Image (cartoon, rainbow, N blue to C red):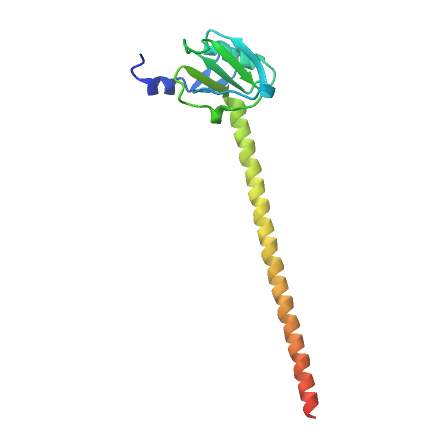
Length: 158
Protein backbone atom coordinates (compact mmCIF):
# COMPACT_ATOMS: atom_id res chain seq x y z
CA UNK A 1 0.00 0.00 0.00
CA UNK A 2 1.36 3.39 -1.01
CA UNK A 3 0.47 6.14 1.45
CA UNK A 4 1.24 9.02 -0.89
CA UNK A 5 0.44 7.82 -4.44
CA UNK A 6 0.41 11.32 -5.94
CA UNK A 7 3.85 12.07 -4.50
CA UNK A 8 5.24 8.78 -5.79
CA UNK A 9 3.70 9.38 -9.22
CA UNK A 10 5.11 12.92 -9.26
CA UNK A 11 8.59 11.71 -8.36
CA UNK A 12 8.44 9.07 -11.09
CA UNK A 13 7.00 11.39 -13.76
CA UNK A 14 10.38 11.91 -15.42
CA UNK A 15 13.11 9.33 -15.05
CA UNK A 16 16.54 9.04 -16.57
CA UNK A 17 17.73 5.55 -17.34
CA UNK A 18 21.42 4.84 -16.94
CA UNK A 19 21.91 4.06 -20.64
CA UNK A 20 19.35 6.17 -22.39
CA UNK A 21 17.55 9.46 -22.67
CA UNK A 22 15.21 10.81 -19.99
CA UNK A 23 11.76 9.29 -20.23
CA UNK A 24 8.48 11.01 -19.55
CA UNK A 25 6.42 8.42 -17.69
CA UNK A 26 3.09 8.14 -15.94
CA UNK A 27 0.84 5.60 -14.29
CA UNK A 28 -1.43 4.43 -17.09
CA UNK A 29 -2.05 1.59 -19.51
CA UNK A 30 -1.59 2.07 -23.21
CA UNK A 31 -1.04 0.10 -26.35
CA UNK A 32 -0.67 0.33 -30.07
CA UNK A 33 -2.10 -1.08 -33.27
CA UNK A 34 -0.59 -4.42 -34.36
CA UNK A 35 1.14 -2.71 -37.29
CA UNK A 36 2.88 -0.32 -34.86
CA UNK A 37 4.00 -2.99 -32.37
CA UNK A 38 7.78 -3.48 -32.51
CA UNK A 39 8.13 -6.04 -29.71
CA UNK A 40 6.34 -7.63 -26.76
CA UNK A 41 8.81 -8.81 -24.11
CA UNK A 42 9.26 -9.49 -20.41
CA UNK A 43 11.18 -6.91 -18.34
CA UNK A 44 11.38 -7.10 -14.55
CA UNK A 45 11.68 -3.33 -14.14
CA UNK A 46 10.45 -0.25 -15.89
CA UNK A 47 14.05 0.96 -16.25
CA UNK A 48 14.84 -2.24 -18.14
CA UNK A 49 11.88 -1.55 -20.44
CA UNK A 50 13.15 2.00 -20.98
CA UNK A 51 16.62 0.76 -21.91
CA UNK A 52 15.08 -1.72 -24.33
CA UNK A 53 12.95 1.01 -25.95
CA UNK A 54 16.15 3.03 -26.40
CA UNK A 55 17.79 0.04 -28.10
CA UNK A 56 14.88 -0.77 -30.41
CA UNK A 57 14.98 1.18 -33.66
CA UNK A 58 11.90 3.37 -34.04
CA UNK A 59 10.57 2.86 -30.49
CA UNK A 60 8.52 5.92 -29.56
CA UNK A 61 6.41 4.57 -26.69
CA UNK A 62 6.26 1.67 -24.25
CA UNK A 63 3.75 0.15 -21.86
CA UNK A 64 5.00 -1.89 -18.89
CA UNK A 65 3.00 -3.93 -16.35
CA UNK A 66 3.75 -4.34 -12.64
CA UNK A 67 0.29 -5.83 -12.15
CA UNK A 68 0.57 -9.25 -10.44
CA UNK A 69 -2.91 -10.15 -11.71
CA UNK A 70 -2.45 -9.02 -15.32
CA UNK A 71 0.62 -9.54 -17.54
CA UNK A 72 3.19 -9.04 -14.74
CA UNK A 73 6.43 -7.60 -16.20
CA UNK A 74 5.03 -7.54 -19.73
CA UNK A 75 6.35 -4.74 -21.93
CA UNK A 76 5.06 -3.55 -25.28
CA UNK A 77 7.11 -1.31 -27.55
CA UNK A 78 5.48 0.82 -30.24
CA UNK A 79 6.48 2.84 -33.30
CA UNK A 80 3.74 5.38 -32.59
CA UNK A 81 3.66 7.65 -29.52
CA UNK A 82 0.37 6.87 -27.76
CA UNK A 83 1.34 8.55 -24.49
CA UNK A 84 -1.43 11.16 -24.48
CA UNK A 85 -4.15 8.56 -25.08
CA UNK A 86 -3.06 6.15 -22.32
CA UNK A 87 -5.73 5.21 -19.75
CA UNK A 88 -4.74 6.43 -16.27
CA UNK A 89 -7.14 4.10 -14.43
CA UNK A 90 -4.58 1.27 -14.32
CA UNK A 91 -2.53 1.78 -11.14
CA UNK A 92 -0.01 -1.04 -11.67
CA UNK A 93 0.82 -0.11 -15.24
CA UNK A 94 3.27 2.47 -16.58
CA UNK A 95 3.70 4.10 -19.96
CA UNK A 96 6.59 6.19 -21.20
CA UNK A 97 8.20 7.97 -24.08
CA UNK A 98 11.53 9.58 -24.83
CA UNK A 99 11.15 13.05 -23.30
CA UNK A 100 13.70 14.68 -25.61
CA UNK A 101 12.00 13.30 -28.74
CA UNK A 102 8.51 14.22 -27.49
CA UNK A 103 9.67 17.77 -26.63
CA UNK A 104 11.23 18.10 -30.11
CA UNK A 105 8.01 16.84 -31.73
CA UNK A 106 5.96 19.34 -29.69
CA UNK A 107 8.27 22.19 -30.76
CA UNK A 108 8.05 21.12 -34.40
CA UNK A 109 4.25 20.96 -34.17
CA UNK A 110 4.14 24.43 -32.58
CA UNK A 111 6.40 25.81 -35.33
CA UNK A 112 4.21 24.23 -38.01
CA UNK A 113 1.11 25.76 -36.38
CA UNK A 114 2.79 29.19 -36.28
CA UNK A 115 3.56 28.90 -40.00
CA UNK A 116 -0.05 27.90 -40.74
CA UNK A 117 -1.36 30.79 -38.61
CA UNK A 118 0.91 33.26 -40.43
CA UNK A 119 -0.21 31.92 -43.82
CA UNK A 120 -3.85 32.21 -42.77
CA UNK A 121 -3.31 35.81 -41.64
CA UNK A 122 -1.62 36.67 -44.97
CA UNK A 123 -4.47 35.02 -46.86
CA UNK A 124 -7.07 36.98 -44.88
CA UNK A 125 -5.10 40.19 -45.50
CA UNK A 126 -4.94 39.46 -49.23
CA UNK A 127 -8.69 38.79 -49.22
CA UNK A 128 -9.38 42.16 -47.57
CA UNK A 129 -7.14 43.92 -50.09
CA UNK A 130 -8.94 42.18 -52.96
CA UNK A 131 -12.35 43.14 -51.50
CA UNK A 132 -11.23 46.76 -51.13
CA UNK A 133 -9.92 46.81 -54.71
CA UNK A 134 -13.18 45.30 -55.98
CA UNK A 135 -15.23 47.86 -54.04
CA UNK A 136 -13.07 50.72 -55.38
CA UNK A 137 -13.40 49.37 -58.93
CA UNK A 138 -17.18 49.04 -58.51
CA UNK A 139 -17.46 52.58 -57.17
CA UNK A 140 -15.37 53.86 -60.10
CA UNK A 141 -17.57 51.98 -62.57
CA UNK A 142 -20.76 53.30 -60.97
CA UNK A 143 -19.38 56.84 -61.08
CA UNK A 144 -18.49 56.44 -64.77
CA UNK A 145 -21.97 55.05 -65.56
CA UNK A 146 -23.54 57.89 -63.62
CA UNK A 147 -21.50 60.43 -65.63
CA UNK A 148 -22.48 58.78 -68.92
CA UNK A 149 -26.17 58.76 -67.98
CA UNK A 150 -25.97 62.36 -66.84
CA UNK A 151 -24.31 63.36 -70.12
CA UNK A 152 -26.99 61.53 -72.14
CA UNK A 153 -29.75 63.14 -70.11
CA UNK A 154 -28.27 66.59 -70.75
CA UNK A 155 -27.86 65.81 -74.44
CA UNK A 156 -31.51 64.78 -74.56
CA UNK A 157 -32.62 68.22 -73.35
CA UNK A 158 -30.63 70.12 -76.00
